[in-house]
Image (cartoon, rainbow over all chains, first blue to last red; front, side, top):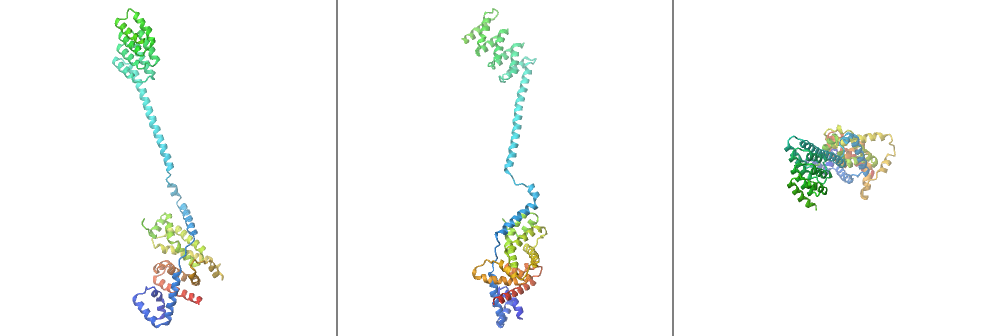
Length: 250
Length: 178
């Protein structure tokens, strides 16, 4: 083997990467060749110099500039993606959720209120119609139902007073008087009861109205009651009722 | 998280996940920078050229076809070095050596600083292709097989070329020193 061939193998020989056969060949040659021995020594020292050379670290500018460049490229290459996929903004989600909630609650509130209102109106209309019904029992039912309404419902109160004054059926007038006693805080009702005492000829109604008026301590009833006591046509049992009730006023 | 290979990351970048390039940058920027710095001996320019390499990676990302990523990256780096070399060739003059050495502020300990400066001088006396082989094989420890891929040659041819280049460098190194 010539020196040139050996020289080419010296690097691998030094680094121990030669196959065993070639390695022994090189070693055999080195023993006899001074030139190659010198070459090997030089190469050895030279390779150690090369090994000493360490990689340098680039300045921080390189990374900074790269990051800037990459951010620009991302913005440039994916403008649509940025528009289609905005970052989740929880504040705006909350705002939307709050407005949806407000709309729904307003709707439900409105629906509930209008339903309530309409049901009251519907019931009023129903009771008012029923109060005019041909059947006396239905009118009594309507009067009893009318007790469920509040004193604010003047339509119902007026209808009840109407029944008290003009209903041909005694039982309906009695029921009306009883129902009206629930609304005795209204001046309108008190006036009506006194008027009824003066005009109604039926003794049952008279007795019922007397007891109601004394119960609500309506002083204006004393005068018509006195008149009834003086009236000879007034039956004895009515007079007894009047006397009993007049004592509660004093 | 599973360590993704360079190739997997590069394929993801090719399909639009540009932000992943920062992983490959972290893996390779020092090596690419040192490749340039050994080739042209100028820190500032080396940083600029390293930056250019990664700009080209983005620009040509769709042309990457599943091959060895390092080989692909070095191919880009070589092209950039080549065009830089051609561009500055006209400006080159006799003061070239002084210029290069003025820029060479090697950060090494005092004991072997002189040695390495001398090595750098010797390295610059080599031809570009010889210098490149030594930089890749000796300094960057790239295997013969991969260098063959990068420069478009066979493994055996590269082996022989590296040996020759190393021998030349050694001769220049000892000539000057002695």
